[in-house]
Image (tube, rainbow, N blue to C red):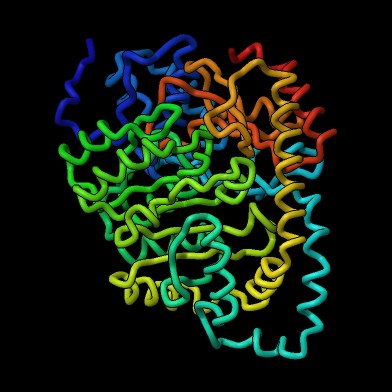
Length: 464
């Protein structure tokens, strides 16, 4: 038994002794990793002394010392002589996905790109816009939400996705991530709660944390978020908003069915939730289905902020998205856009606008990207006998792995093999019992994709 009682003692870190497995020092650091990932431990937090933690856990003093040393070697901890051991400011505190510090030789299956070999289709429009005698007008601060011509084009494109809006209720922002930041800044305050899918877009989770918001994970099935569980959470605690990716959830890949949309609509309407609808995959889903499922913007126009990104559809480097808002929210969304963005690049917006005014080019991009997506998914199926999600053409696929493996260890193992993948821990706010690694299919040529999948196939058995 521990010498001291710590029930009311303000110890800075409380690992769960019941979860410790041998070797204990590695198991202890695995809990540390998980607590850093889920923001239970913040950077520069001073950890308990070795003797204090050993007494709390009723384990050997030297085991804690071995764990702390291991944590330092992994870059999670640092020591100040005479002061103690601290969580490193460079520890794995962010689950944000980016291409930062990825070596040239690494096959990147982490970041979801947009089949960049299609970018040559964009080049003629960049050239054309650069020769436009009115280009100078795009280089100033005027029309911060987009010109009337750009907004009219946006409205026409959005109509093909089932979105019903006008130029007075549409704004051009610098990509969906920027639009999410604008939306959270405009309508949410620290401590507000937002319902999310149990696994969802990692950068939204991190953005919510930056704004000091609480995300409330709701379980799902292959039709999407379970309505009865959303209602249950709404009754348990006050929830202000809900974040949904209806066309293709990232990372699971499900598409919200029409029935599920209507079931969620009833609850969202009754509970007066603000919907943040991230519909970045609608362009491809609508194209291959040849059917438009009504977005929440159509179902609940007065409660929905709708975002449609052009980066996955047209080009990753042209940071343009369309943000649609109801009249009652106009003042707050405009103020947030002006104060966060000042103005989205008029040049980028004009290039996208010119492309959308070329039906032949739009059709070619859609056809090409569907073909690439189908080939990439077929390639994945050739290596791994796993079912496709309810959206059969996602930009990513998942491989289930054991729950007793450190997320950092599995990511580092594959990185050492020249492959960057992401553990499912990045896509959730809490530890989950059904972990997986997510493989982005859209960031490499087919031959590179095959090479990377072959390496994963050779190495994955140790984690199954």
